[in-house]
Length: 64
Image 1 (cartoon, rainbow, N blue to C red):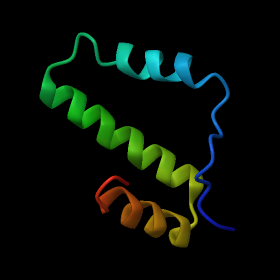
Image 2: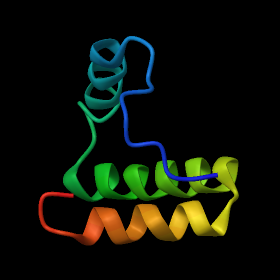
Image 3: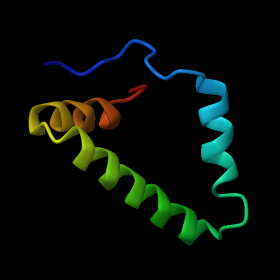
């Protein structure tokens, strides 16, 4: 299995709006904590360490 880089979220605009809306009344610190929890929840759901490592490398790269 490899990291999926092609669009794969049904209704991405609504997802983005939900993500942004979920932080609307949070302080910056609360929003950062929420994002960290979300990353950990999704990482746990994915579970595959090779996929997670590839995602970390890609996210760290410029323009990733």
